[in-house]
View 1 (tube, rainbow, N blue to C red):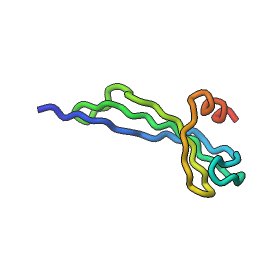
View 2 (tube, helix red, strand yellow):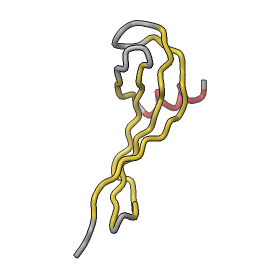
View 3 (spheres, rainbow, N blue to C red):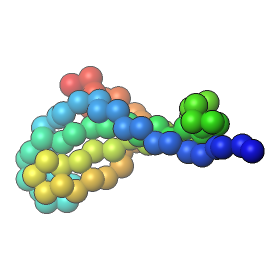
Length: 76
């Protein structure tokens, strides 16, 4: 019997103040990285997918950003 699956973990990279793409207000945006890993017997083995995203603290909208854009914003 094999027990396998996928597990996603979100890592908070930082908070930046930008204009929201959804509501247009200047507010804090939470930058995060979500890594999905393949796991076998509840042990994460290797990453399957990595996504970067931002969430507006004013309206709650979330959207994806590219890796390059996330790296530039994390440096700020």
